[in-house]
Amino acid sequence: MASNKETASDLCDQINEKLIAAENEDQVTTAFLTTILEEFSHCLSLDPNLVEAYLGKAYVYGHLGDFNEGFATLDAVSKIAPDDSRIQDMRQTMEELQEPDDDHDDHEQEELGDNSVEVPSQLIEGSSLSPKLDLVLKEIFARLDSDKDGALNPTELGQLYQSTNGEAIKQTTIQFFRQNFACNEQGSLTLEGFLQFYELQTFTDPDETLRDLKALGYDSNLNPL
Image (cartoon, rainbow, N blue to C red):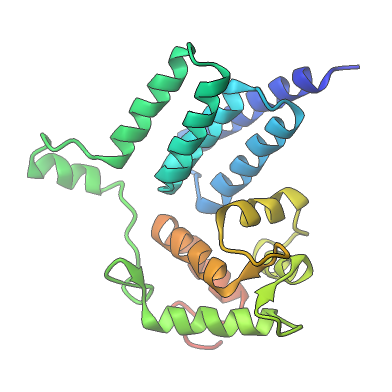
């Protein structure tokens, strides 16, 4: 019977292969990255010292634009394996993702822009969610908050996940929300955390947000269906 460490290592290899395949096929979405992050966290629950899982989490955080969590993950693994050169390599990768090369000319930037995410104007205003999307999300949150306690407990969060993903929520997904977005003392997702999640998803994968909205009763112009 394989030990937890062996199982975690094998799982980590499979996750990395899945991530590489998705990148090669241009099928990386926020939902996909969120799932990958959960799977790396599961690996660490089996082997808290698995360097590859920490590096994987940092990489995913970088592509989600959550650089604070990415660098914090690298700081944590540096204490476990201070001499592992891969950690510094990943730190450099994160820094490059965070700070575009200023030496690129306008033409190069335009070419790179072909791969950038274009967020529909009805979803954002400046660097924040648009007022209309903010109101729509608050309506959805109030609808999901069946016990009206101002937060989504695991059952209510599960209803959101079932509606938008077509499957039951996993405990690792619930834990992901608790670790990354504002929750109350009971571990339930607050309105602030709900908006934080959708702001992140909207800026990194607006099509996913539009799909969620459709599943929750709104068209692409944020009008009720």
